[in-house]
Length: 136
Image 1 (cartoon, rainbow, N blue to C red):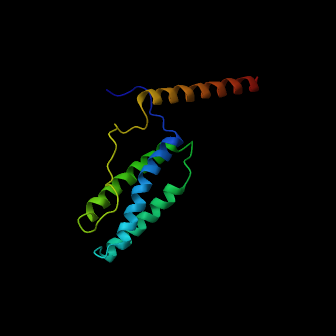
Image 2: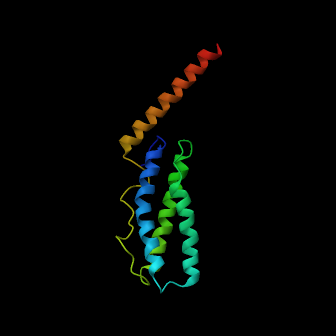
Image 3: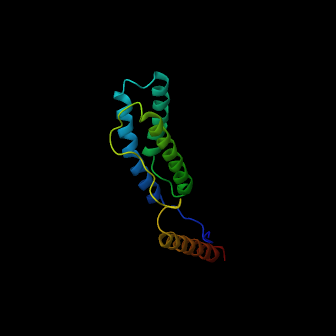
């Protein structure tokens, strides 16, 4: 059953997934750097991917774009799992393998999402009422 309320993603949700993925990405990058069995083209492709990840991971999450940033982080997660699958047989990968947490695709619990939705809706109503008073 789908929820009638939209999923609300906060910057803290984006920070949490970035932090979780960044530990793996850094460790994986070190493993690729020392592995002599990685083909030069694959190494170059990984370096480009990792450069994009670094730019994304180092950027502060935005309030306005948190949901899109969360989706981007999930896409990076899928790519990191694919890299792991491709290179694990070739190189010893330092650290634990990346596994996705057992969630249904949305950050936080449903109660947290509901609370966030109500809080944001309350803020929107308060701003609308304030603007209404100002325009009178």
